[in-house]
Image (tube, rainbow, N blue to C red; front, top):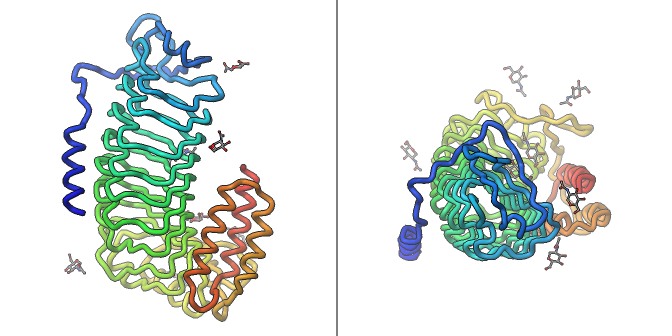
Length: 389
Ligand SMILES: *[C@@H]1O[C@H](CO)[C@@H](O)[C@H](O)[C@H]1NC(C)=O
Ligand SMILES: *[C@@H]1O[C@H](CO)[C@@H](O)[C@H](O)[C@H]1NC(C)=O
Ligand SMILES: *[C@@H]1O[C@H](CO)[C@@H](O)[C@H](O)[C@H]1NC(C)=O
Ligand SMILES: *[C@@H]1O[C@H](CO)[C@@H](O)[C@H](O)[C@H]1NC(C)=O
Ligand SMILES: *[C@@H]1O[C@H](CO)[C@@H](O)[C@H](O)[C@H]1NC(C)=O
Ligand SMILES: *[C@@H]1O[C@H](CO)[C@@H](O)[C@H](O)[C@H]1NC(C)=O
Ligand SMILES: *[C@@H]1O[C@H](CO)[C@@H](O)[C@H](O)[C@H]1NC(C)=O
């Protein structure tokens, strides 16, 4: 394990793209977008993208093309392409990106590839983009993240991988992303996370892992993340969050644990090991009111604020709870979910709801324990989602 990690790190070092030392990326005073009707028009471009050059018409590029299934090697190589600053390739039905597709885009700092049809990334997909700061890969069909997938992107700050079908992340997938601040992995199908997977992320501020199938994670053992301020674990299958450890992310300020299966929380230990925590969301967990009262009391004493919602049923300070533990049958849950999902043909909605329910059913050995509150809020959430689709 360690040996292969070392080997890959060495390979990454050897493969590190040559930096062009002389190129100076110029920021224009004015944002201007050039829209190309076809890739061949773009390739035949004669007008500079460098704002310092006469005849400049813009450094932001978009394509008015409905379909670009494969991005071949060097596809964006054209006159002065090294000075393009942003490129929008959203919703182009892209399925495949060949290695070296983004070569000659040395100054690019934003690349939008959301709403496409990509199922795979390779180690050299983003080769050459060493000034990239924002990469949007949301709404694709990625299933796993290989080792060194983003290794060229040493200036990346924002990475959006939400709404894919990611089930596994290799332990060196995020290697070299030392400036990354914002990592979004919401709405995927992760069930577990390797404890070392975040170890390179020494500038990360926000980690969004909401709406996956996480049941079996140990955030207390994650390495890296020394600068993390915001952790979102909402809508997963967690039945415990153990604060009896020194977390690597002891600077954490906000924590979202809503929509899980928590019935206990040790606030005193939480406060001790996450001393900067100022805000927590504990809604939509199957709390028993008497337990919740003491949790809320301890939060109050520790000066940790918590999210509260107006609710028609019994609450403690705005957090719903039940007087007795709620037991629900598998059939009940399935009825609630199917009445919701039938209304939408969107695969992603069905997929993750079924995934989560299945997970929660499998996980529980006392038949099925679930919170009606949680399911109701899930239903409301789904309606909002469907309305947006
Ligand atoms: C995009 O192309 C279509 C059809 O070719 C055209 O009608 C439309 O005006 C173009 N849009 C822009 C923004 O250039
Ligand atoms: C994406 O790919 C799948 C299977 O390859 C296909 O069924 C689907 O129509 C594609 N969607 C788009 C928007 O191209
Ligand atoms: C992806 O996430 C980033 C930041 O987390 C956000 O700015 C961007 O709008 C998201 N993309 C889409 C398509 O929602
Ligand atoms: C926590 O996550 C849930 C579910 O995604 C969301 O509805 C809620 O607004 C989040 N809480 C906060 C305080 O952002
Ligand atoms: C946690 O950190 C404290 C102070 O740095 C140290 O004394 C203690 O041994 C650590 N505990 C664990 C379980 O690592
Ligand atoms: C929390 O503390 C405030 C005063 O600091 C008090 O007014 C409030 O009733 C307390 N709430 C709970 C639920 O203990
Ligand atoms: C909750 O309800 C009360 C009265 O019904 C209202 O005054 C308050 O603004 C509501 N709060 C939220 C966050 O909706």
